[in-house]
Amino acid sequence: MILVKKIHSARSRNDQVLVDIKLFLRNEIEKTVNTVHSFFELLITQSEKYKEYLLPGYTHLQLAMPSSFGLWFGAYAESLVDDTITLKAAYDIANKNPLGSAAGYGSSFPINRTFTTKLLGFADLNYNVVYAQMGRGKAERIAASALANVADTLSKLSMDACLFLNQNFGFISFPAELTTGSSIMPHKKNPDVFELIRSHCNRLKALPNEIMMMTTNLPSGYHRDLQLLKEHLFPAFEILRTCIDMAGLMLSNIEIKKDILSDEKYKYLFSVEEVNKLVLQGMPFRDAYKKVGLDIEANRFTYSTDLRHTHEGSIGNLCNEQISNNIKKVVESFEFETYHNAIEKLLSE
View 1 (cartoon, rainbow, N blue to C red):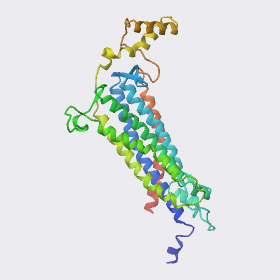
View 2: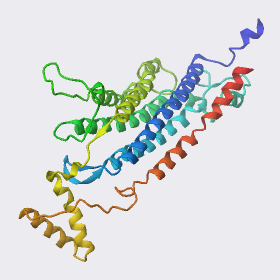
View 3: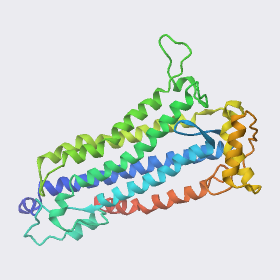
């Protein structure tokens, strides 16, 4: 009975909740990374599958230059590489042990904080006990920022999909069961899934600022304000993963129109190609630009849809293998098995 009573020595609700939050964040980030990685693989697969399918590229929502679905899918894949790097930063912050900081000022008991760090599979300690408590709110905000980065990638992709499905674009379509109709307009195929993904993700993008404002002007030490962070952050992980899964379902069933750029309305997409041809033949760029511009004004512009883009990351050289190698390095850097092994050993003893 005496041993049972002593087990709470050098502990506080503060550092116990803190370590629980860190354990929760660590686990949720791992699940999120796995979901992001699976979606990345789908994007790369679709990029390779549709790399020969051209589509218009836009700047200012005006016709600009030729693009391809290989570039489009691949762009969002590479965006997820950087998003995963920010998840790694959030994981590194969460993977530090605050246990033993007690109420935020340490303990006069001769405890071994390094020992509990190893037992729980943390990579390191939050050494300074005051900072261990100050890290509450900060770890949540950094995790929320990482989620917001993924959400931003997903919301932009969803907006593209909504535009591309629009009849004025008509670049893509989906099976009827993945779109919705109208109560009075029988021709409608609405992109409800992407609209809901977009809205959920835009709300997730506000989460870091919510946490920032909830922790604004708090001095060091514990404050009850911090308790409210959970109801904002904790559901966000599952919401984001669900959005990713839904986007994956949609893109797995996407139907892409062939020969989009054969339509004459897209002919001016190739103006830069014609300028570049003249430059490669020896004409100064300014003169080539002027000539093609005058040809367009005089309605004598001629063009070819045959593209010769060979540099890294272009239509003819997507570099998907290099992009895949980059995310592989990031995912492997998490070393999730380290904490899995520690927890498994702890639970078995």
